[in-house]
Image (cartoon, rainbow, N blue to C red; front, side, top):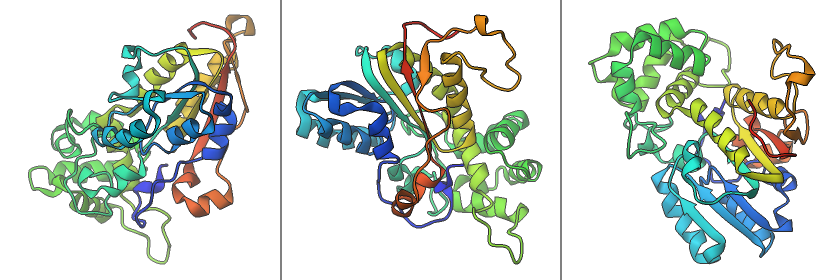
Amino acid sequence: MDDTLSAQGSSKHVPVLLEATMAYLHPENGGLFLDGTFGGGGHTRAMLESSPEVCVVAIDQDPEAEERALALKKLYGDRFSFHSTNFADMGDLEEQSFDGILFDFGLSSFQLDEGERGFSFRFDAPLDMRMNNREGITASEFLESASEADLIRAIRNYGEERSWRKVIAAILGARGKGILGRTKSFADLIESVIPRRAGFKERIHPATRTFQGVRIAINNELESIEAGLEEGFRRLKVNGVMVAISFHSLEDRIVKRFFRKLSGRPEHRKDDRFQEEREILGSMIETKAVKAKEDEIRENTRSRSARMRGIKKLIEGVAS
């Protein structure tokens, strides 16, 4: 669960698991790297500063990320380039043969702290939630028009909300009343059907899971992650490393299964194929996800839910 959606105080931009990421990628050895989720540019800057022999290609679909990238372009010139695109569309990039690739999934602190983007109910703002707010439908439009099946997929499957029936019934009953148009009124609606338990201190706001599910649905986040991982591995050099940082179980499950498939391991408990049916294209750097240490969590609460995995490419090929 990406608990940055909860009603906590404003955060500053601090790259998550920065030290661990650099230890996996080894940019100090030089090379060409891809930051598939530029965000505030913290990971990109660290790579560029690690060696004068490093070049970084960064991508992000958020229009505001493009503006932040201009500062790095002025500092690092031809060593840095930025493309305003979704990592799912990485196949359109001219650059390839990367020594290292990084994905930091989820929301950046910039997106959360910009109230008008509608990601967080810490602010009363239009319920937008689009990572690329130049295209697609807003969260409000989705809630007003989505079929019941699409609402179930968003709230039960993506949000992992146990009280999904109550939430969906409330959404359907609120249509056309203006309640679904703003973050605060939508959060209040959810809290009215999933109230906080008296005498219990809830770790997260009752609306957190629903906000997560709706955001994932309108941005096609899980499908984008699958596409980005596959195309990224194709563009990775042999002996290159791919690192992925996830913030909730759905993201991490996709990464874990993809890396296990690439390394010739069972993807899940029901994967009972014979070993000779598997192809080994990479090697997982560690079998378990890397988590933030206590000192990092104190500095950056967003890192509490972060899970990092890495894989080294051994041979060319595409996992089938």
